[in-house]
Amino acid sequence: MYPPKFEYYRASSVDEAVTLMGQHGGKFIAGGHSLLPVMKMRLADPGVLIDIGRIDGLRGITKEDGRFKIGALTTHATVAAADDRQFPQALKHAASMIGDPQVRNRGTVGGNVAHADPSSDLPTVFLALGATFHTAGANGPRTVHAANFFTGLFETALGEHEVLTAVEVPAEAVETGSAYAKLFNPASRYAMVGACASVTVNVMGECTVCSVAVGGLTSKATAAPSVGAALVGKRLTEKNITAAAQAILNDLGDDVMGDIHASAAYRRQMAPVFVGRALTLASHRAGWVARLEKNVKDVAADVLEEIERRLK
Image 1 (tube, rainbow, N blue to C red):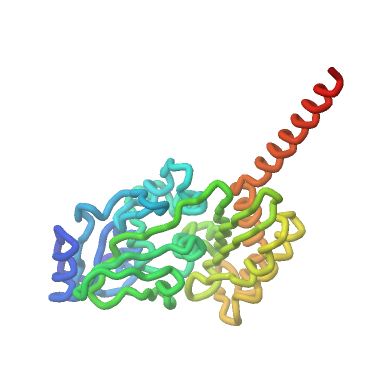
Image 2 (image 1 turned 30 degrees about the horizontal axis):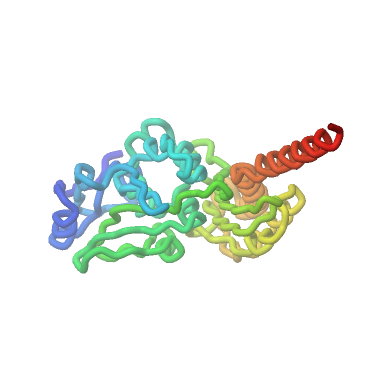
């Protein structure tokens, strides 16, 4: 199906993009993997497309002061291939599961989150990781925390004529791990249920910080404070993780979505399952098991050394 007719402009800078949007209105486009399909289905008719895909400085990942800044034009494939040990594992994993190789090599982080599809993966991950969104507009730059960025079904806090320029996420310390798990739509690979967890643990295997978010269930990515409250202060055992995962049902409310692929009731039943999977993998990535083993070996070595010393 062909999209409706539109005017096309190419911006060479962020300032020019904002100016063109102010003059003509319409939509920004970069990779096009979120916008073009809905235009072809005649679900969107912006009239004007402003291409920002060749603007210098909006592509790539940089690290500074313990945070990673991801340019809005950075592709999903680039995020999936990030090789810094402190880069959030949940974000790498989620990016690697988006669509197919063609989509991942062309689709952009900025386009994905600005589109705010409730079944998309990145909004859920950015919400759980406490990301910050950087925008530019006629009134200058501003930042929006992830908790305030996703406002509704295909809606964000981006103002009129504003463009998203970057997303910033904290680097992961050695005692922190994150993970993303999802129930795939077998046709589109969108999330019918998606869950992201970030946990911080101490040397005794106790959870000190826990942040969880889910997607594919409600009209926007949804934070799950009940899960964190149920797990903080407890050891990350299978029993405690399973119990905490059940607390997601307290955060979903009554507006769980359903469609021909999965009913609302089925999605609700699957939510604790995938939250539990994300928590389990995040806890292992936090490295507390390895640290406990090292502590035990160190203690054992000290005991053996003391025994040998006394036997001499």
